[in-house]
Length: 160
Image (tube, rainbow, N blue to C red; front, side):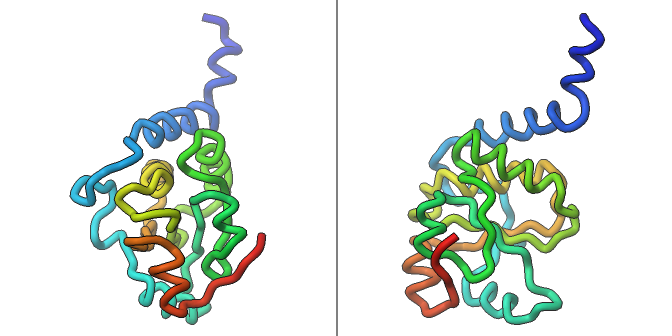
């Protein structure tokens, strides 16, 4: 085996490949009782809205769904770092996450469709958890973003 092959697979490339492989093997549709997160790793919309009003403890919020939906409306201050249901999007998300402290209070959400059918939230959660994020939570949008966040009058913004 050539020695330069090991050099190319060490460091960030090999762990990223493992994370992507694990995350992309999850089926697109799963029942709630087999979700990769615990109840303690979830947050309800009204609870998150309250947390966002406290700058000292406000979490970093990351939208992991489709870019066009982010542009149409997202939680005020949320960041977009790729559509986690695609290999390219998941790679973008994990590349961003590489520079984020693992102790960051992080909330991820999608809201494209009913949560049990969402193609983005489970791969994102699995990848970020595999990277070692200790304060990672999922925003519970049971129906979708329009119904469970915007429709309840919670703060959101449009655009990039």
